[in-house]
Image 1 (tube, rainbow, N blue to C red):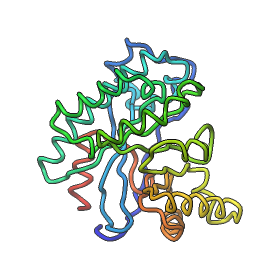
Image 2: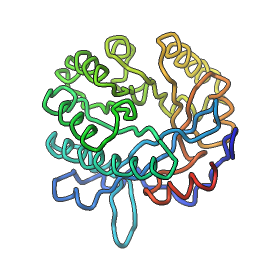
Image 3: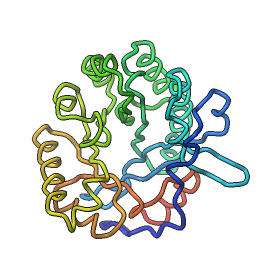
Image 4: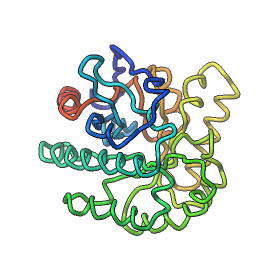
Length: 268
């Protein structure tokens, strides 16, 4: 529905702990597909982008989150997964644009990859060879916990910005997504972790933290996305706080390419 967020009724949720005792290997890659979670722009009431998420496809159990596989995965396996998801997302982006939906695509990229010049150049080459523009791709930095990766990020993000890529700091407020990193790196988007969204309505401390994150991001000239919105109340709260975009089950779960197209055609 144009101009407002229509809460999506989620029929199921993938288990975030699926594959928790396994690690990603190159043999897993053929069974992993990109699914796409819409990003809703509050000012326009439209879906303007998607985040590409890895889903493990099982003929019996269907799709499940690949998050559990990523724990303990080797840098090489993570890199190949990133290239695979990007390749699928670029093809999907081209198809959506051809039918009137020019969406910005966000891709999760390990910090360890961004520290490697050859990997950065490969990302750029993939995007350009697909016919896409880097300005229509956002690289969401995924933590690897390495001090060397953290040290390389300021220069790496500066270079990627010169190419035109958007750069997002993900899960801001938890883990390694620190204030220092925010100041040192060349971000264009701040994604507020769901922990600051889902309890903000009833908890004054959480609400104060949410408001502070938004204010900081705005002062730095960043787009602000609230993750994990699950209810209409969540949407109202983050909109009042000043967020630009929302993402979560209140809008839609992650969908395969054609299902996303159907979703867009129904509401836009």
